Image (cartoon, rainbow, N blue to C red; front, side):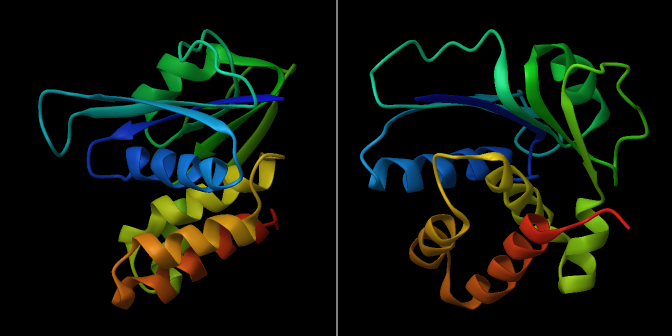
Amino acid sequence: MKSEMIFSGIGGQGTILMGKLVCTAAAAKGFNVTLAPAYGQEKRGGRASCQVVLSQEIGSPVISEADTILVMDEESFKDYEHKVKVGGTLIINSSMIGLTTKRTDINVVEMPFTEIATKIGSAKSSNMVALGAVVRTLDVVSLDEVREVLKKKMKPELVDLNIQALEAGYFFTME
């Protein structure tokens, strides 16, 4: 079993936090995890991404093609659309991305993360909406396991809002 994913966006969108939360949940189940973050020069507004490998065996942390790729902005879409494995999933933040893929060999999930998070109570929780969408694609960790990690890792006053956002992303359906 091996699951490879990439989270990419603009610094401050929480892409690296998403990777850390997935890794923490998988490590608690005994999986080997690798998190390879990459930051732009700037703290906020620069590029930020992380590559995550979850596996039963220790292997290379370098990802040439990923099972799941989450893109939070248009530059990330341009950089990573082609790196989704055939049959993999590309998750697109339709709140910030107006581009569409021409690929027909992958699953595409378009979700308005910011709008969903704003309805819940804070646009800042859009990364948790996105994480819910990612978790829905994974066999390695469940919604309950990531929810438990959130409870342990987040400030108590932020837990309820972020769990609502996580669940909104997980249970989102296109209308």
